[in-house]
Amino acid sequence: MKLAEKENVDLIVMASRGGKGHFRFGSVAEKTVKNSSIPVVTIPISPL
Image (cartoon, rainbow, N blue to C red; front, top):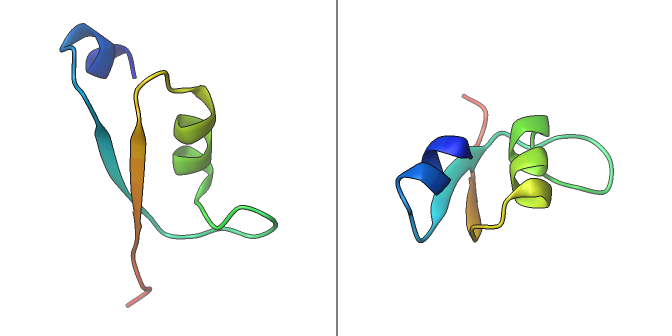
């Protein structure tokens, strides 16, 4: 997120493998969504 803020990006887009529990994000995606002041879009990917 430091790089995104430094580069003054408008949106963060990231893939998510999915996780357990309430959130259907992986741990990195979940932390990014919770802690980012920049809007975040997560795209779910299917396991191969």
